[in-house]
Image 1: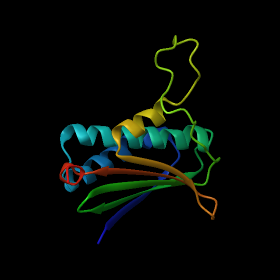
Image 2: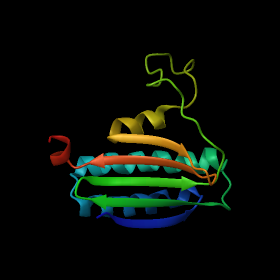
Image 3: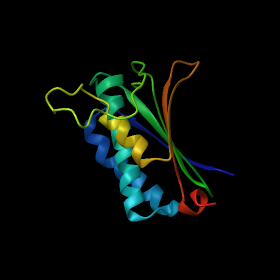
Amino acid sequence: MRDRIGIVVPSHLKYLHFIGSVIEEIAQQVGFSGSEIDHIKQAVDEACTNVIKHAYEGRNDRHFCINCFIDEHGLEIVIRDRGKFFSPPKRKYPYMSDDLNSRPYGGLGIYLMKAFMDRVEFKRTAGGYNEVHMVKYLKRWKES
């Protein structure tokens, strides 16, 4: 059995702190450590910022959904929007060794999401929604 907690958020950067607070509370209830909670919050912040800035191109008159699914294994977070479709870059890591001024723009947020979460997937649904699925397992399930 999985519990679901969902919120609908206006597409405005000023709500990122609120989202972080909600995610922190949920992650604490699931049983994650302080550093794991910080990583989960950072991954969600990156994903939500991408929705606001890129999928909705900064438009503040839209909204998106965040659903958190909780079970004994950990936490799955699904962020869903109806904005511009996004296809993540094929490269695995951003060009961190390149000179800052010559590096291609973007990709660092996705890199952080993948580094902080156990699984990250980008989907386009048949209904025209974009979804980012991020999973973080509790340590006891990762070690078994």
